[in-house]
Length: 159
Image (cartoon, rainbow, N blue to C red; front, side):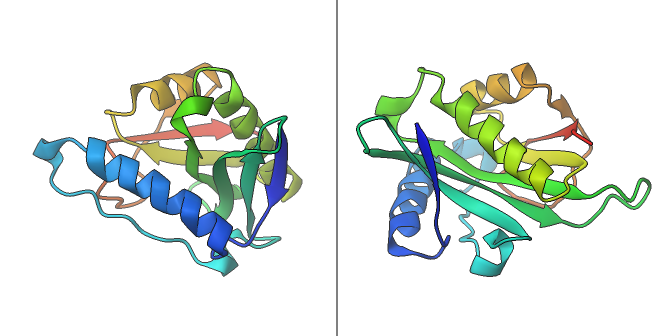
């Protein structure tokens, strides 16, 4: 696999984000209301504030995306916090370890930017994602944002 940095507002990134948001909307639990996508801005995912990656398989086919961005420090610890966002793989790329490799690469890059803590949010309906995060050392934390699509928040100390 290869990871390529792109502007999160580029046509290539938007195609991937559109697919991600469409899939989330289609599978969003009806009892939780309507899925509300939020498209990211360039400054959130541009060095040194963050990065957005496109994932290519060994044949050069684009199979997914994901990013990390710096967010507000936790007041009680003043640790440098980065958030994992929009981690998505095309359905045909799932179940082969690509998600774990992408998460590891995002973590590596966030640490390179000075992250001491990584956080992310997800929805309980994304069971495979929750399993990936827990098996990668993330533990449930108190909500750090007001994301209406999230039901679980995770964190991991890295610094």
